Length: 108
Image (cartoon, rainbow, N blue to C red):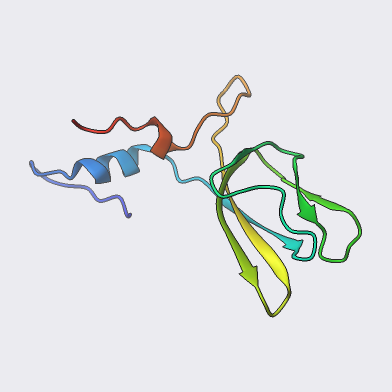
């Protein structure tokens, strides 16, 4: 969702929340399908956590960042699982927090 500047009232609440949160990077990682994946959709993962076997069978593929598994898909052409990791924000003290969607409070 693009952030827009509005003159006057009528601002959309969802747009305000989206504009208040910085966009987070998504990292795409591929693992060999024969060995499967070690994570599930929605899992919170840590940097260095094993995700699966490298496409060239040379060893494990590990997460390059703290994040949440946003998608897992199978590519039949390459016979690989493609894992999308939504990177978690890092606080000034070095800890990581949840993505913005998990911080929002639902309205009554």
